[in-house]
Image (cartoon, rainbow over all chains, first blue to last red):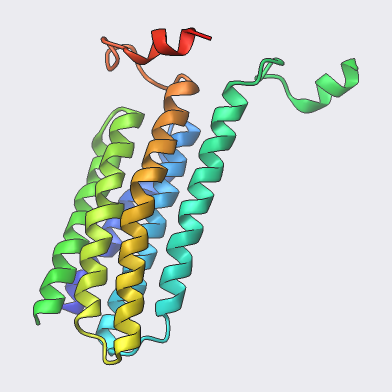
Length: 99
Length: 107
């Protein structure tokens, strides 16, 4: 039973990794990394279910919180980059050289 | 045994969401599919483990993780969707009716 759960999670991680490799936009990659984080948290929890001991359970809480914060920060970054009125597509060094 | 069945259902939900992330052909649809995994799927796995671990402290911490996941998953999904909209990754056939654009045009 536990092996079946780990196999299902491994398949899900493979799908997310495919999207991380393939994803056309940066948002797709963010979605894939978030999914990989969900798979990792689920694997930790299933390991705790297998052994019955909770040594890694604080890691679960911290990892889910770090995943939320990182996703929010990357979303803000993408949004701020797209709203930049000063030529968002241009690299930074050309802007500084012009100044 | 019941805890393992609940955790298996959660893992299958995560697998279905990952299939959706691979198969859907639009960024907003992929975000929508992922939000199902990170809310219901992981919460089912956490609750299934919470009924099985030995100590009460570990069980309480798993329930805390589930509550935090339920609280933070819609917020991060909303932020990703907002970033997708504002950075223009939406294809034209998805937003045939766009009610947000005239609101954003107003100062």
